[in-house]
Amino acid sequence: MADGLNMNRQLLVSTLINYAGRNHGATEIISTDSSGNTFRSNWSLIAERSQRLSSALASEGVKQGDRVGTIAWNDYRHLEAYYGICGMGAVLHTINPRLHDSQIAYIINHAEDQVVLIDPDFLEVAERIAHLVPSVRLWVVLGDEAPKSSVAVKYVCYETWIDEKREVLIWPELDEWAAATLCYTSGTTGNPKGVSQSHRAIVLQSWATCTGDGHNVNSGQSILLAVPMFHVNGWAIPFAAAMAGAKLVLPGANLDAGALVEHIRSEEVTFSAGVPTIWLSVVQYLERTGRDVPSLKQIAVGGSAAPSSLIDILEDKYGVSVSHVWGMTEMTQGSAGRFTHRVERLEREEQRKRQSMAGREIYGVELSLIDSEGQEVDRDGQTPGELLARGPWVAGSYFRHDDDSTHLESGDGSWLRTGDVATINDEGYITIVDRAKDVIKSGGEWISSIDLENAAIAAPSVTEAAVIGLPHDRWGERPLLLVVLHNEAELSQEEILDVMKPQVPSWWLPNDIVAIDQIPHTGTGKIDKKVLRTQFADHSWSAAI
Ligand code: ADP
Image (cartoon, rainbow, N blue to C red; front, side):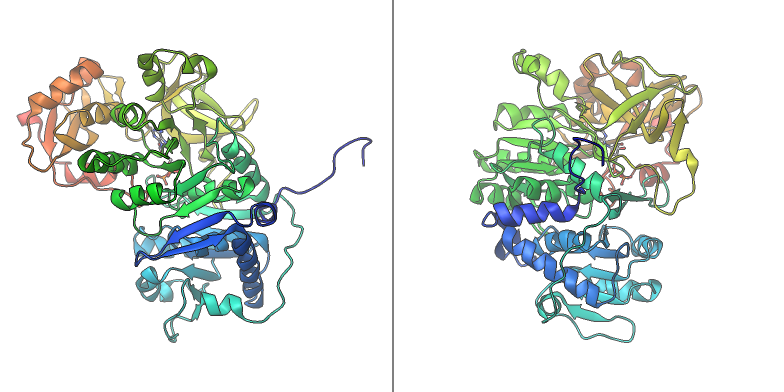
């Protein structure tokens, strides 16, 4: 070994839970089950029970590198699965239960999961797909009892299984480059693609999540995890919370605004993270009921663009400091929006402008913009380009996927093509213009569907907005705005356009506005534009504004 260098200690997921169990053992992990019952665990119990889970998995023949699936809500047993599976060197494969049966079967087969841990709420899914997923030899029911096994499906009850008397497995010293987790993108852009994070990547991104400019996860926080643990590893917060020894509140199946506000108030939650729709419903609930959330100091919002009107009311009325972040399955958190010392001292209006953007680079995820010729685009906040990313926790490739178009090899190394079109300004703030496939090309110029949606949602009659591009004889494509209206509201195109006009260039304004009952969402809560494009494929511009 070279003179005077550091020790060679591997960065492993097991070190996170070992640390939390040893130093923050009594810090609480609070879960709510589907019947609304609360269960209070703590880091010490999670550490002990996850080790027993490892032992049970080993007795079932699960080995290092084998994939183990979970189909579960945010609760303490799922948290034990995070650590029990990774700790023994198997790969935690979180599965999104909101996907269609055929997609769930596709990803289980692709991952070749051997065992699946499943919440009792989803047993019907197991019954329906078991015959399609031959690699799964055991379904572990995350509860106090399990149904009788049949020829097609073999069940065991989690509690009995991890309680059986067998030697507790001492977690091995793995190679930090071994795979720890596997997460599939939701397939908004084709078949789901698997992203595997190594132990090293999980530990490094957890560190980033704990920094003040990341999500500021620390032992002083009580964290409400409003991001599903089956989506992008719950934004790495279940790992970062152990690294920090933070208190965790896991809301289970019920993500209704009223339930979330109840958790915030009863557990004195100081930080939470979630997608904009969650926070929109929380704000609507607070406005309707006159309640408040005095303990809540910070939130991170991302996953889709957060409307400025949402950020303003959280900051100005409820005193919650908002970090608007951008990220994706391929890297978890890719940016953060905390104010710098200078921005903290600017006028509120100047701060608002910055918060409407999707944050700035955090150390560890390097970003770049290129044009269609592959040339780097200026960071002028104006010129859009394809957003590229690289870094120690950015996906270097996809699991069992041979398609080199997902990455770009340049003179200075390999970059992930994010599929997002963005601008970056001279302060480093990113604005996501659109997913490359959603951007509207009108007369050779780009229109951002995201900006139009955010502009429309500021209209008092509108609760949700979606914009798609449809073919147009003269301009190639023009925007169609679809809105869901508040209960009693009637559609007034004029009212909506008047609100939008000061916010976007006049030639971006939609050619038509249609009120619909409901906007379709993908399994991860994003607007499903594929469905809307099909639904409105025959829309005629004759009624155009
Ligand atoms: P998928 O929906 O394919 O499963 P992810 O859940 O990983 O993918 O979502 C990643 C995508 O979400 C990004 O590529 C980007 O398009 C969008 N996104 C994430 N954060 C933001 C944000 N703050 N503003 C706009 N878009 C965002």
